[in-house]
Image (cartoon, rainbow, N blue to C red; front, side, top):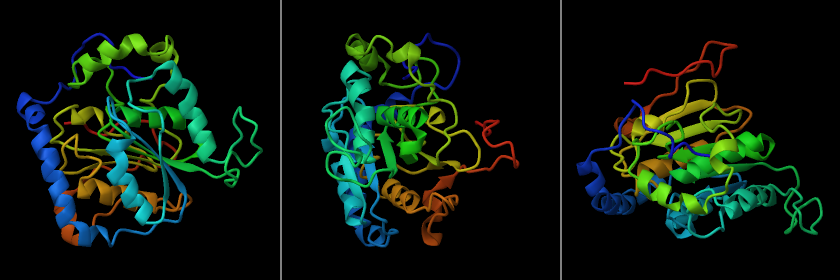
Length: 291
């Protein structure tokens, strides 16, 4: 499901040591900015009540996404954590249970005894927005590749899904160390998450990311696909006010009338939008310019 452990080759390199070492402090600053930005965030677009699945990053759990989920709950969404404890990569348990979690939230029958509306009577046939932070975003894209009929849209936060070689993130060593726990076919037979998705997709990244190269966190150009840069640390994506605003704005999109992100006029300097549509009939055929 990932390409973290492939052989090294030329390409974007991992962030500098300065960015890496400053991550904890900058994450705290992001949290402080959240308090200051509360009045602005209170004006974020309201939700329509659809389900949102939030997947944490490597070595993180649902506790790390609590601020994000509570923010979205207050906007009217019905959020859910992934419910699989600490994310140690594509273990057999994750490979087996995460797709079932998506089906459950979408009101689809699983292997259990529940009827066509799922375990808690959710409306069958609904779709779920999936948000993934770092490695969680790679899992989110994998879900959309395998079950696009269940996914309303995908939003990734600092997710290096375009990484094809090692040496592009500071998480490589930890991921390799945990690889003995991973499902035997996870790397070789998982879905190709680097290909453009068929559902609306927003990739949120930061040029100040101290964990992963921001260049491998950007989406292919194409219809209903965009990349948005925000001033956040990697550890702060889940509580950065700019990232929260993007997430709220994107979730409020009508899936049948999707429009590119437009920052608030007085805050435009905080966002860089990389959304460029391919010519008609050629969506997803090429990549945007990479500096």
